[in-house]
Each structure stands twice: as C-alpha cells, then as structure tokens.
Length: 362
Image (cartoon, rainbow, N blue to C red; front, side, top):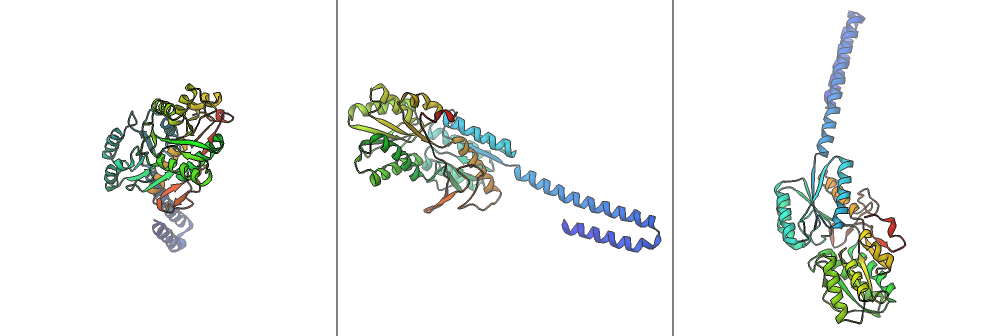
C-alpha cells in the first residue's frame, strides 16, 4: 500500500512538471487531481488498518467454570463481562449448574463444537478434561486454564500465585492461631482437584519446614465436594471422633465457612481454627462473630479477566513468558514455573479478617 502511494505521488510530480509550461490553470487542475488520488490511496491504507483492528477484536472467548451458580464464579463472571465491555470482544461464561465433572465435560464438548477462537477452563477434574481439550486444540482453538496447572492439553495455565506459596500462606495464618502446635487436617473440594491439592501440599510442606510442633492428623484429606453443607457435616463428624484436632486448612471457598460452622456448633470457637479460601460476603458474619479468624483468597473477577486477556494475547501471537503483563494488579509481572513453562503465576493473594472484610463486597 505504501508503494502504491509513492507511485501516485511520483506520477503527480511528473505530470505537474510536464504541464507547467501549458499554463498555471492546467497545472493546478492536474496537480489537484493527483493530490486527490494520493489522498484516496492514503485513505485506503487507513481503512485497511481499521479493518485489521476490527478483525483483531472479532474473537469469541468461551469461559467454562466449575459451576455457574456458585458465588465464586458469579463473581468471576463480573470480570469476564468487564473484559468484554472494555475490549468489544465476545467473551462469555458458561458451566454446569452443579459442580460435577461429568456435567462440565458435557458443557466443554458443546462449547468446542461451536468452535470459539479461545476456550478458558477452570477444571473440576483436570485429567478428565484432557480428551476434550485435546480435541479443542486440534480444531485450532486456543486453550487457557486457571486452577489447572497439571493440564497438558492447554496453551497456558494462569494462576493468581505460586500454588505451593499460597498453601504456605494459609499454613502461616493457621499456625499463628494454633500457637504453632497441635494436630491439624487438610480439606479439599475434590481429591482430583489439582490446585486444591497443590495448596494443601504447600501447607503441609510449610508446617514440616517451619512448625515442628504441628502434626498432620491424617495423610488422607477430607473432601467437601465443593459444598459448604458437606464441609460442615464432614468437619463435624471428624471433630467428634478426633478431639485432639486444633486446626483445619480449607481449599474450596465452601470448605472454610462450612468447617467454621461445625466448630461454632460444637462450642469449639477459640479452641479449633479454620483457615483457607473463602468469599468475603459468605464469611463476613462468621469473621465478625469470631467463628472464623482469617480467610485467604484472590479476586475471582480478576482471574476471569486475566484468562480472557491472556487468551487474546495468545490469539494475537504475542510473546508470553516471564514478565508478561495482563494489565491487572497482581498479574502485571507473571512468572513461569521452572518445571512447566506453560504455567504462569501472579502475585494476587489476599488475607481477610474481621478488621478488613468490609473493604470487600463479593
């Protein structure tokens, strides 16, 4: 296009030179015509650029979460909608009505059949998702995961933090409450949840490293099935049969409030402690009542936005790696996992207590 403009301008100059002896009126007329032609060529290049910009934004990004009625993912959808509004890109969230792996895989299959440009996934069971994610990539769909660092069939997995470090962060909070001594147990949403188990592993490793007087009560983890009611029932039963227990770590956002409810009902507030992932609005009253002392988390809205932003960068062919900036606090200097360069880690963990819970409304 630039060559075409230069050719037009050169032709205009030659015409002007040849006709200069035929009178200023003719020369002026032809020069004007040549100038207009050059303007049209420039306008054509500008239109081509605009078309390219429009084409760049003409992406569809589907985000499949664990359960679209869960409060955590209701909040995540806010970030996805914000991304769509700011960029004009068609980004949307979907997922099973219940947190069920088989249902999620069915949703994934339905989405893949629609051939979006990118598919972002928060997997319930990463291993169970591999086949459908491999199919997506075969169709040319870019795959971005969150809470799925073990997924092989993805382009990248973006995490709010180093998973082992987040587990250590939870343990440090719990150890302080327990006086750095006593028995504790870990709870996860599902035994197949990669991120949940990585956080629990990080918590156990931190206790072994820094708190010699704290003992893991059982190697087998308790499972809440991502249900606050199940977490409550499991914790209540465990406390009845294990009176020496002093602390719980929780991975699912449903674990921590469910455990706290059991602690409160059994009259063990101040004697037994629960620390882990939680939603401010769901834990507010428990924190203020003292049944919970600390919850840990990251903002799921930011995680939703981050997945979509990363998907767009991959679609645009941008270089991804150490230092990648997704334009969000906590995600503006991503680090790669030394053992798996597809895993990108931010620094977005938050600790919430009764003192600051009212600063968060989600």
